[in-house]
Length: 209
Image (cartoon, rainbow, N blue to C red):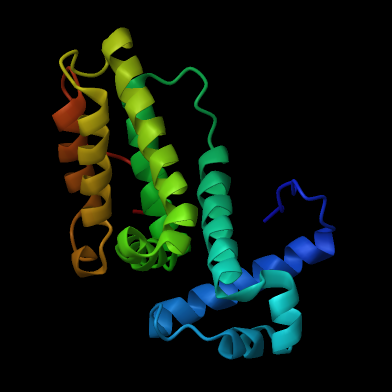
């Protein structure tokens, strides 16, 4: 996966190392939860010493920042694989569902890690400052799609974009939770789209669902 340009002008080698550290931290979070996250264990997974880890991450808060950045990179990488040019708002919502499903299949740690950090964010300002902007950006993007849908006629005109966006996101997250892995995703995705569409909706289709 190509690494994005870094605002601090870091070298590709440094960016690659930070990515490796973030993925190791994600594995630790998934296995042990936030309380079990230890710098030494992350360093061991990366094959580096704690001093090198601290240099790149800058403590546990910096480690959380690297994890958040890696999640943002993965979400953006998935989103950019498909051009939205020419799509109606309904088609964009369908694409959001496809991207969500694909990320769950290809990188199954993404959403559990987001869940772990999101649960702690309300009571942990250090986590909140990294996670809440990501969630706000996602909500803002969905709200913008819903707003446009009222204009192009593909979505119900009476939708209130802000709360409707929350409902769409909550539906996605619920559908993507581990205990729901046996559900028929296309069937449920179709029903989600029916809630927002202005007209009939065909059965949801996606890659290797």
